[in-house]
Amino acid sequence: MSATITIAPTSAYPLTVNRLGYGTMRLTGPEIWGEPANRPEALQILRTAVELGVNFIDTADYYGEDVTNRLIREALYPYSSDLVICTKVGATRRPDKSWVPFNRPENLRQSIENNLRTLGQEQVQLVHLRLMGQGPVPLEEQLGAMFDMQREGKILHVGLSNVTREQLEAGLALGPIATVENMYSYAQRTSVFSAHGDNPGGEEVLDLCEQHQIPLIPFFSLIHGLPKAGNKIAEIAQKHNATEAQINLAWLLHRSPVILPIPGTSSLAHLRENLQAADIKLSEEDMAYLA
Image (cartoon, one colour):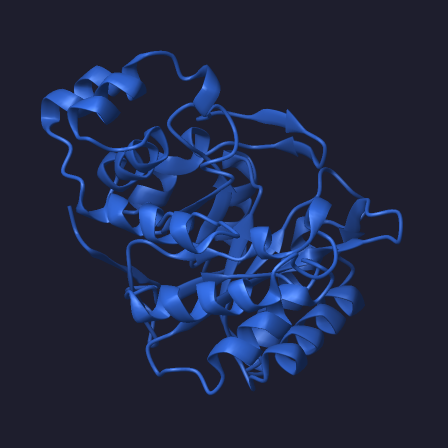
C-alpha cells in the first residue's frame, strides 16, 4: 500500500501528496453553516493535521459560507510548499441554508476569484467542479469555463465531483480531469439519495479512475452507512484493536491505490484517531472478508 499518491502524474505539474488528507467541511457550524463552535480548536486541528503529515486539504467557499477558507488561511498561511489546497465550485448556499447550483461560467469565475481572495492564493492548485444534477447549464459549458481559467493560470488542475461514470467519460473527452471527488465508503459504494440530491457513489467510476490514473477522493466516508455495515467491519476492528471508522479508512486505502481519503472532523482527538488508520495493515484475508 503506497503512502503517497500523485495527482495528474503525466502532466507538466504533478502533485504528490500523502494518502490521508483532511476535509474541512465539519469545521463549520451546524448544517455546515456559520462559525465553528470552538474556533481555537478548529484552528488547532488544521495546524496539527499539517504537523502530522497531512498535505492535502479539501475545502469550498460555500462551506460556512467562506468559513473554512478563512480558517485555513488564518491557521496555515503562509502555506508550506508541499501543501495542496483543493476547493470546489458549482454550488452555493441560500440564506435558508439550501444548496443550489452556481454553475454558469460567470458564477464559476466568481467562485474561483472568491477562493483565491479568501485563501490568499494567486492560483488554486486543484478545483473540483461539483455537478448539481441535470441542470440547464451543459457540462461542456461548465468545464469550458474551468479550462479557460486553467489556461489563464488561475487553476492548476481541474477535477470533477458528484459525477456518474457517463459524466466522467464526457468530461475526459473535453479535457484533462485530474481527480474525482465522489461519495464512497466501505458501506456506501453506490449511488445514494441525500438531502443535497442524488449523489453518485465511487464504485461506478473507480475502475475508470484506475484506467486513467485519476485519484478518487471519497467524501462523507465516515458519515454514511457504518451503522448498517453489519458485523464484518466490527470483527475486523476488534482483530486490529481499532475503531470501525479506522477500519473504514484502512479499507479505502487498501481498496485501490488511486483512492485518497479526506476524513473530516471537528475534534482534535478524532483527527489523531483518523490519521492512525494509515498505519493499519489489512491482510488479503481481511480484504476478502470485507468484500
